[in-house]
Every structure is written in C-alpha cells, then in structure tokens.
Length: 83
Image: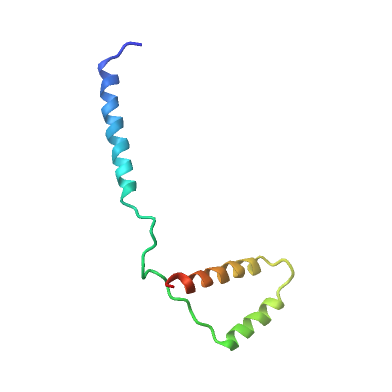
C-alpha cells in the first residue's frame, strides 16, 4: 500500500479528535456530590394509611404496585444519601 498525502493528513486529525474526546470525558467526576441530596417529602400517618387502603383495593398484578416499590426504594436511598 502506498502512502499518500491524504493518509498522512488523516492521522493527526484523528489523533486530535480522539484526544479532545478523551479530555472532555476526563472532566466528569464519578464521585458523589456532597450536599446534593434531594429532600424527601414527608407523608403523615393518615396519608400513609389511606395509600395502603387504596393499594389493597387495586386489582391483582397491577403495574403501579411495582412502580411504588421502586419509589419506596428511591425514597430510602434519598434518606441515606446525606448520611
């Protein structure tokens, strides 16, 4: 394979492109930000009781029950976020 001017020109361009992309990624930190925990809404016992009653009245295999379980897990994670 013969080397020509076009081949030699693409090498540095590709190198600069890859280097700039890697540099952009290096500025992002994977460390959690201290103090960035969102507040969790507090629900009264009456609201919790009403919700339990409403959930029990739902038909079997209702998708929202799974969603509420996910929400519960997120609330637990938020409550321990700042600890």
